[in-house]
Image (cartoon, rainbow, N blue to C red; front, side, top):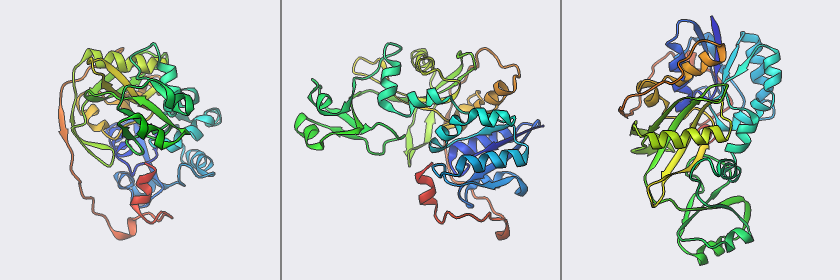
Length: 333
């Protein structure tokens, strides 16, 4: 029996991973979050629920390592951006205790969590929109307006703005934590990608985001489009992806898929990809365990809508935590 720990289970990605792995008879699932009210904690048995510090806390990695050792965990599934770099930096230490981390390498994280570095890494592999730092040279570049100004780091639409003309761009000022990027006017797609240890792409599932709430897709459909599959696969190969990532693409004015960003973790809309025939958490676990995995896993076209589901439990089963509000917890997830 393989024991796994999934972190960030107050978020939709963590819940999706827990639910996927619970379907396996050869896996024992532990669930962790920084908030005792996290819904994903209550998908597992009471003695398998764990509270961890914030992913950015200085003691987060040490705490998780200690939990893994105490609980006999052999595979760790982190699902929150802020947890990834600290865990990946100590992958060798985890491995020395027989614990594999289901997350990309430090090198891949460096290329994906920084959007300027991502544009550089993927140049020549697929269509990459013109991207410059928001410095004097970047502002002076011969842009076709409108352009996009957004943070170098961070997922979703937080801090993203459409800038209509040069005067507005110059009024923003400069800052090394921001980038200027060519505006892409076409349709946007998310492509969930699973890459094997040798780098070959086992599956790439394009999907739309028809409705979005708090940065998470709550309605969408999978799309069979070889052009999107190849673009996302090329991006994954360019950054040396091993494991799961979400590649966001948008078509340019000529209809060519271009790279927006890569989120190097399980996405919140993973249930749609799983239902379409590609159970990425389970497949990733098989890759880590050395179990046979098909060379390529196909998917079907499928649509989904989401709704809240209540879980009722005795009050004394709620796990105590220092986090006092979900708003604060969701901000990191």
